[in-house]
Image 1 (tube, rainbow, N blue to C red):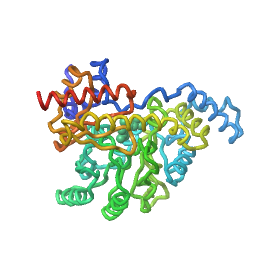
Image 2: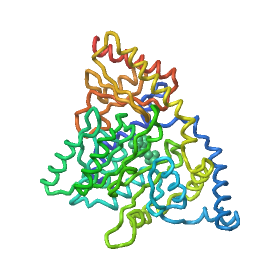
Image 3: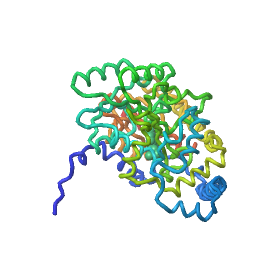
Image 4: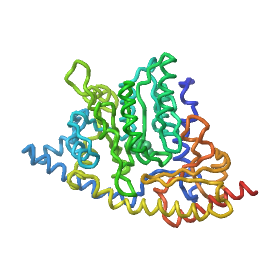
Amino acid sequence: MHIKLKKFYSDPLLDVMDFLSEVTLDFPNAISFATGSPMETFFDVESSIVALDRFVEHRARITNKPRAVIFNSLGQYNRTNGIINDLVMRHLAIDEDIHVPPEAIMVTSGYQEAMAILMIGLFDPLTDVVLVSNPTYIGTTGLAKILGVPIVPIHMDEAGLNIDILLAALEEIRLDGKRPRALYEIPDFNNPLGTSMPLSTRHELLQVAYENDLIIIEDNPYGMFAYDGKRLPTLKSLDKDGVVIYIGTFSKTIFPGLRMGFLVADQQIESENRLLAEELSKVKGFTTVNTSPLLQAMVGGILLESNGSLLPIVESKLQFYRTNRDRMVARLAEEFGGDLGGHIRWNRPSGGFFLTVTLPFTFDEQCFRICASEYGLLCCPMSFFSLDHARDHQIRLSFSYVTLEQIDEGIRRLAQFVRDRLFG
Ligand SMILES: Cc1ncc(COP(=O)(O)O)c(C=O)c1O
């Protein structure tokens, strides 16, 4: 039998995820500024398994039940929206100044499931349009393509999201007879750009969302990785009108193999005394049923050990990532300051895992391959993450999964590639 595939399979965007994971295997000796993986020397998986026991102990104590009963309950199907919502609630209050009841939280299998549930549960593909800041995380745009959710890119300028461009897009979508239903944004230490949304724009965006009946989906995997002092408040912590749905993940703060994250949807459902997260459980119940209770218990134990805050866990990692950021920026200045001065620009992100370099020529997939095979360096064309051609001259460099020596050598190789390209 021949299977005729659905149309989205041939969309090049969907090849990027596989391409990025497989290309590392194709060039095993290359230095990679392409992967945004966290460094696994920080994972401490063994202690996380021990933490599970602490969670069981804690639950046994507060419910007055034997340990064996609590342990076995982790082997059972469980509450659809999660069993550690109280602990996630405490983490949000302490670390993010977000104050919501446990019913407003749904524990999910990472960001990806949270977003899938929102896309399935909230949008009508016939009438609704989801706006995405562009370029953006391909996990989101790829998912929208698979689920048939129409997306409209909103161009980001040097400072990130531009409110005037957003307002113009809202107008245009309405003129087209569609409803702009939500905006997906990564305000803190953006992937792929490394930018952060200024405080004034955060306030403006919330106001625009309220006035336009627009949901904001705030994705915040990197917020706790701030390298230059005080963090800006999340959109959710500033949200007085309930326009923001917030998605968090433990992939970078703890480790991604947990596949553990959550969404916060504290919006009231019309004419019912229920919150949106509770209603969305109907979608989760028919997709993943519930998120592995064993893995939730591990995360629960880790949160209990650190008194509810992820800060003690993240703090030990900050120095490493900050030093890598500083080293990469310093090497860029050294390599591209002299004869190349003025031809090449880059930003200095105040947190997260990524920065943007702007080149005086287009860097496409062919450049990627030449760079990988001839120079032993992997770095991502920004066009991989873009829905238009505005970023064809840029690359995304990740500094999360490399040593200082690799940064030195990698930037040297990048400079050599650029020189050869420009001066032959
Ligand atoms: C912006 C953004 N959102 C979400 C994720 C992934 O989160 P998860 O591992 O929870 O699916 C990533 C990971 O790279 C990311 O960069």
